[in-house]
Picture 1 (cartoon, helix red, strand yellow):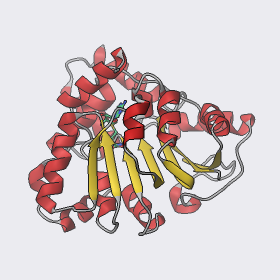
Picture 2: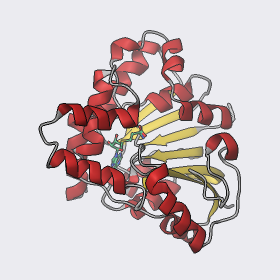
Picture 3: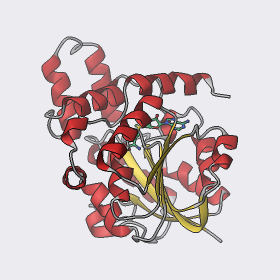
Length: 289
Ligand SMILES: C[S@@+](CC[C@H](N)C(=O)[O-])C[C@H]1O[C@@H](n2cnc3c(N)ncnc32)[C@H](O)[C@@H]1O
């Protein structure tokens, strides 16, 4: 049974699929490769080609479509019909046979169990903070992870999100009618506004979303501990003296879990460091046997 928040969020993504793109821009698999973002390339390089991947809250599906180019089993699940319809069109157009799409509400454990497959890697990027019950969503999706399987959780950080919340307030008040300022803010996050569908998708997602929550590293560590997930790392890094992220730390690398002092220090830094990304960070872990 969908919750009130779930209904609102589902309706929102049906009107505003994310991340969205102009379908006409993708005429071959090569176009999908060219359009892949640096982080998608890093994931592609770091996940073995024979691994199965589940992308939860795949939206319009660029990431999972791209990852399926060199793999036999990549799934994308989401509860938004419009997003999945767009993804299906892309799948058909580019003949992506190893990319599987399915409508699933991750807060509904029965729908999760019905999937009937478990995966080596689970990506859940930018989803849980829109569910209304991030922990329940997290617990449910672990059902789909194989023992020893890897998981990446992308969330808004309580500290890191402060600049975006400030920008949001500005766009609702003194810059309410100022398109230039709004364009500038969205350019901060996505670089340019050439792809109109994408720019609109990002604007809606960041500035007009009906529901979001913010979280801390400590909270995610507690979720991990309670559910036998071994902590690996975060992006940006939570290792005390490392500034940069993936290029230096890699992904799926095990490091020491940060203590409360380091977490506080790092998250304070994220106010500036992740300001452009809206305070977004990813935590990596691995399911214990
Ligand atoms: C911000 S988008 C993230 C899309 C993609 N993961 C990315 O990083 O570009 C959030 C997605 O999560 C989906 N979503 C939110 N709540 C969900 C739920 N309870 N079950 C399944 N999907 C959900 C939305 O439909 C939307 O497509």
